[in-house]
Figure 1 (cartoon, rainbow, N blue to C red):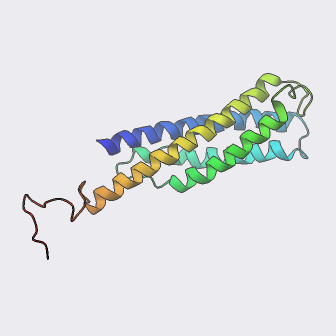
Figure 2 (cartoon, rainbow, N blue to C red):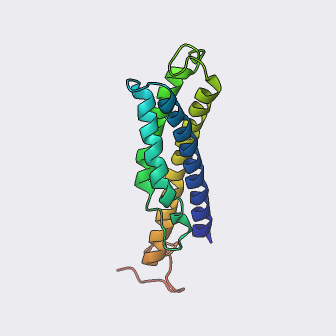
Figure 3 (cartoon, rainbow, N blue to C red):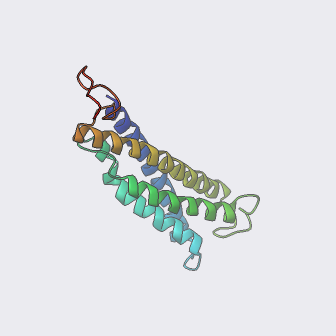
Length: 166
């Protein structure tokens, strides 16, 4: 039952990351298509990370719904959380604190820029939460497969009998 709850929580986190990457990809694709941003490394970096996440999580989002899944995307969550943190920092440096109107692209469109900042943070946050969820899920899956019991051997009586000390 605990593993099922963790898998549903992992699915929810994966879905939130997928939606965040979809929104960021859409807005940044609009900026890249409408304005000449071939020299804006921050926007291109954010677009690449969002697109890679969108592609991976389109299939990875479904994995927690499979009974055999046991937190195998832990490493991907860990790596992508750092990349999304960097994307969040880039977007906040470029467009937060009154710099929205003075920084490219579009010297305006502050609503879209702040939406990118927000969903960069959401993707980072849900990936970070999912690191812990996937770690617990991996541990529960491993314990279930190896048949590990909750008591440690040698610390409690086994089957109601005590082993003689040697």
